[in-house]
Image (cartoon, rainbow, N blue to C red):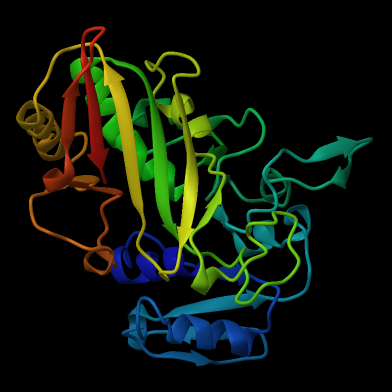
Amino acid sequence: GRLVFRACRLLYPNEVQVVAIHDLCDMKTNVHLLKYDTAHRKFPEEIKITGDDTFQVGEGENAWTVKNLGGRLNPSQLPWKELGVDVVLESTGIFRTKAVVEDGKVTKDGYDGHIIAGAKKVVLSVPSQDQIECTLVLGVNDEDLKPETKCISNASCTTNCLAPVAKTINDAFGIKNGFMTTVHSYTNDQVVTDVMHKDLRRARAACMNIIPTSTGAAIALPRVVKALPPKSMDGLSLRVPTITGSLVDVTMNVKKEVTKEEVNEVLKKACESEQLKGIMKFSMEPLVSSDIIDDPHSSIVDGLSTMVLPNPDGGSLVKVLS
């Protein structure tokens, strides 16, 4: 949520205005965490508290006044109609299914509770756990987003990195099947020292371990790259001791016999296309994870790491890092 706030203010200040945030912590804490960020550094504009429940971002006529909504309110209880909210970003990771409504009352809240509360649209920052109206990865299935769509999942960070690569390779060479591994920076679902967690691997210290765990990216991928064969991709995540910057390693059996150079050329051209320009980027530089922090692209292909082997049954085995 804070990263989207930063992006809206720093990249799209004339197109988007954040009018309210809702978090479990108090406004003083929210303002401090917006102002100072360990991974992305200090916010470049002034942020100051201006009232009991408001803070200001920036100065002068272009400043934003943002309402800080306190309390443990569910989506359907939030004052979106009163605030005239157009779009809500649901980034708690908690509300991943639709609300249950019985006799006109919400008995179990869900992501569409924001619509019930008066917002026009809601965007989830995670894959939904039900059949949401639209799961969207920019540059991959933009055509699925209709003007009338109200509830949208933006899939996950891993899916946004993987899907442009998978679609490009599938369109060019035809994917039979494959595995993906995301080498993923730790998140706040993990722990600093060994402590209880329902996932016993995530119960171990995030800063001291490589932690194998699950990822929903392989499941979300067919929702956006519909040309992929059913159940053709699977994968897992390795949580590693870095604070930000992650990597997807995807290995695919493809139908055509190809070379490393051909794979890289196809990916490079796709990055320059109207559909993926600004979304996927191709690099032949020896980058490491800290080099991609704050890069706005969803996917940065590491052309130096592309590998290809002939498949004895025909076609090729292709590995791409992004």
